[in-house]
Image 1 (cartoon, protein in one colour):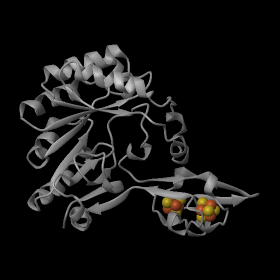
Image 2 (cartoon, helix red, strand yellow):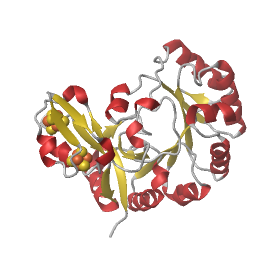
Image 3 (tube, protein in one colour):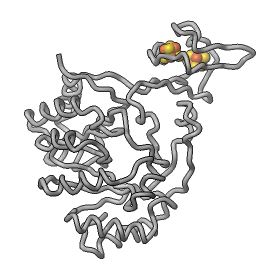
Image 4 (cartoon, protein in one colour):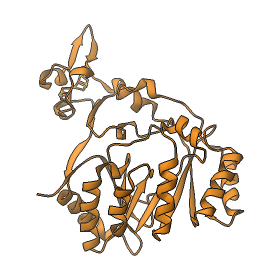
Length: 297
Ligand code: SF4
Ligand code: SF4
């Protein structure tokens, strides 16, 4: 029997998740808690039900099917008791208003490979498959087995990682990952801890080792206004990357926080709002890296 993973999404024909046209699998579970995270459904490995209150039609279908009586309707209001929800997904299927979404689906390596086989004609010369998350290497066994099968089929593979994982996990996928998309959040140890919940020591150590192993790496920097877009931080980041001989950096402008999703998932306490990135700040960031001889876009 093939290894099973827990995913929260599959994106087909993705064009921003590595070279060419790709199929991206989003795996659940992440060690970081970035203040700007727009995929809160990815944080925990366990499935979690989201209830989008504005879509509810008060039809009562969820009340009828829920085995744990997590839903109730009274006085025209819908109450959802998350504490008894086992995320079985029965109410999502029954819901007439698409107000319920169970984030987290078990998928076997064989099933995942089947999706890829259906898509492979679209990959062309450069495209392939990307594992993202969350932090995909949180489910290392699944990643390893899946990537091995893809390599046996001659398919290009990318691993989108925050790098905050045991070196042994990176080492295991080293021979079956064609490129690492390395999300770099902040150059300063304590600021990194404040913004993501953990310091950056392990991330820098792993990046250094990966470069020494000769892995192909594209560093990606989510540019978040007021968090990591200062000239001081970007210059310090460029200095670190130059020293590590990282050749390629991609700046990812921040768009907007998924406030509705946080509320639907019952994660209101984790909401932090930031403004979208100003285009001129993004251009300045790119210039900072280019001026140090790093290929940035
Ligand atoms: S996911 Fe299952 S347990 Fe949770 S509310 Fe829906 S039916 Fe009930
Ligand atoms: S099934 Fe969906 S639309 Fe109907 S009451 Fe439940 S959440 Fe609302």
